[in-house]
Picture 1 (cartoon, rainbow, N blue to C red):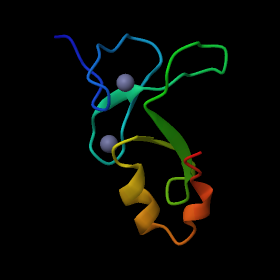
Picture 2 (spheres, rainbow, N blue to C red):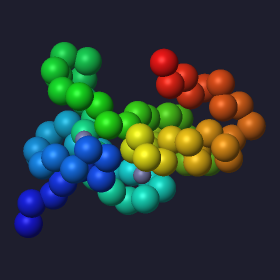
Picture 3 (cartoon, protein in one colour):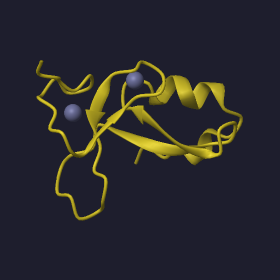
Picture 4 (cartoon, protein in one colour):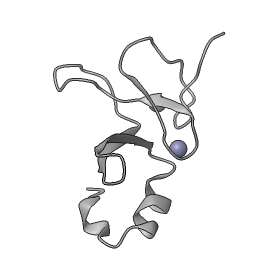
Length: 76
Ligand SMILES: [Zn+2]
Ligand SMILES: [Zn+2]
């Protein structure tokens, strides 16, 4: 079954794909800075699990609203 990015709607490869913690959708995210692909989301450090979590571009605004320090998310 072909998966598509929940942000841009384009097909997902096996690599450079992450799953959004909030909506559960797959999206494009470069695993290394050398991967020359677009990024449809970002990662952040999750305090409760002490690990990295991933979030798609669609859900970034709701995550920022939940957090006390939205300055950690720069959209520029
Ligand atoms: Zn995408
Ligand atoms: Zn999402």
